[in-house]
Amino acid sequence: MTYPGKKFIMVCQHSSCAVQGALKVLSAFELADLPEDAIVMTSGCQGQCSTSPTVRILPEETWYFRVKPSDVERIVEEHLKGGKPVRSLLNPRIHPSEEEENEDGSER
Image (tube, rainbow, N blue to C red; front, side, top):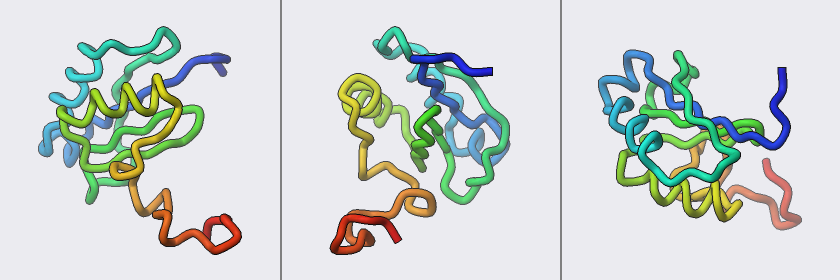
């Protein structure tokens, strides 16, 4: 099932993320001034336990790691409203850093 034009903010609530404060991150997203096309939801384990709490934004597959409640406003403003992911919060296992990009701009 797809929902054209919608963005899903998946905040992991599995044990590792929960211990690291994922419920507070979820609450921060629920209280944030989100754009109309954004839907906040919980998720089970997303397989990134060592970098918890994990926030995954679909459909573009943007993965944020070690998210704190204080990071939420920046994610909302820069990514969800501004269209540019917050590079410093991207999970390096999934998103290579700018230094890891080849000279031609492609990713390794």
